[in-house]
Length: 247
Image 1 (spheres, helix red, strand yellow):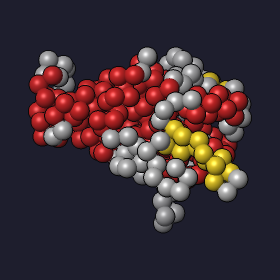
Image 2 (cartoon, rainbow, N blue to C red):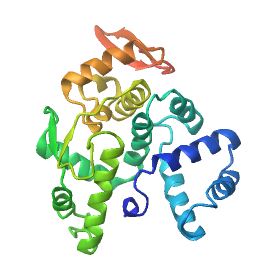
Image 3 (cartoon, one colour):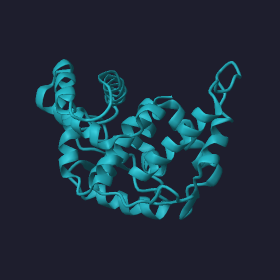
């Protein structure tokens, strides 16, 4: 339940990404992380725990999300803190299976083609209680832990602009700038292949209804990061560095 320990923490993730882009060495990044945060409250043990969670999350991107050096370049392009949080959100999605399960259920139960989603802590906890392991068992956590996890889930949605305040019960489709639009498309490409524009899962995860998805598609097609070509009478929209028959 690492979400109860860390949340999204975009400011700290940004620090780690910057340090890794500078040093390209995790030992040095860890050392610098503690040096830069030495005056903050909290024990060194707590800071190490958070560092381990965020490091694992960033490493989970693998080849499916931008490398940390590429991510640092995208962070520098972001016009808002919300846009940065949306970038880091995809690394959380890749690493945290439980977060992804709950998000899937919210979107499945409430639908993507809408302007608002009901996102109370109780709603999220009710979904957690539906989770089953392969052996049929549920989550073995106290109700208080599940409640904190639900609050953590909501805090992530506030960071990415779906919830506007800590007491809001309904979420809305947030604005999405070019860097997170690109990473959302890349996530969709890696999940769905050449058919991704028919099911842009990365943009769905950002609570973007179909009308917004069309606008985002136009935006990435006009960027230098994506190419549009024809393959067997079908339009293929692919990352610019894709080396396949559609390139």
